[in-house]
Image 1 (cartoon, rainbow over the protein chains, first blue to last red):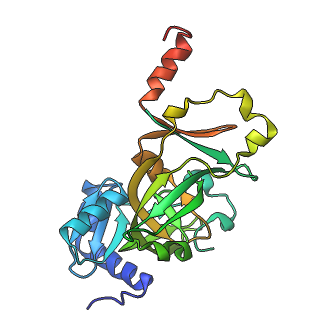
Image 2: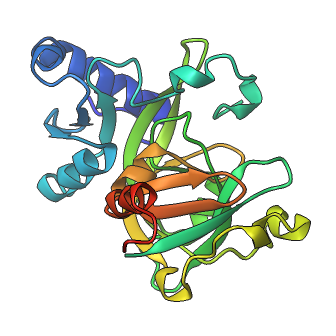
Image 3: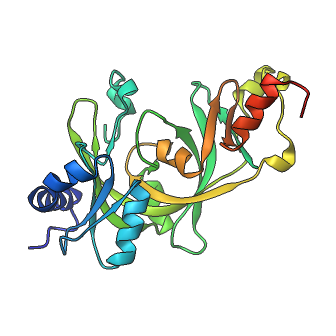
Length: 95
Length: 165
């Protein structure tokens, strides 16, 4: 069933679920640090060395796809750098 | 060879003046983006600033925060052009900049690159993937400069052998 595409959390949850079930085990062994765009409508994935590369390739291959971006081996596609872990949360997105 | 010049704002944060555009043929926004090397990603732009630009929406990505929690954001494709600064650098007002070497004007050129924009936050934030995608070295001191990585060996050579080139 397709996720609610109006809700970024629903798209994200669907992408994470597909990745967990089909790709995580192999990709964390073979492609650590790479970016993966998961098409939450078809379950297909596209890899790239950067977020831009993965998503631009994904759009070319699956023009009607809705993608959730994952960085292999990381909790999120983007993250606070280690040097910033002490900073006040007003520097962080969504705060 | 090209150089892009930024500035330090009143809080000492490095900023670049950039133009962001999307699929809309005439819409673009000029924003004063802070360079934030402590975060991964390309550019974060508040949704209110992004909506009029017609950025191509791709999907979502999660941002992991310092406490380990994550936030889901929409992601879009956009084009970023680094412009000459529209804000007078603070250092120029203090006179510090006048003592620094000025790049030749022909070397100061706009640079344009496509990338994935995270929609969210309170202000425009340029991040490490942006610097890398331009193949630039970021210099932050009394001035802010993006210089071609290819210039680094020349600069090192000049420092080692001053006056030979």
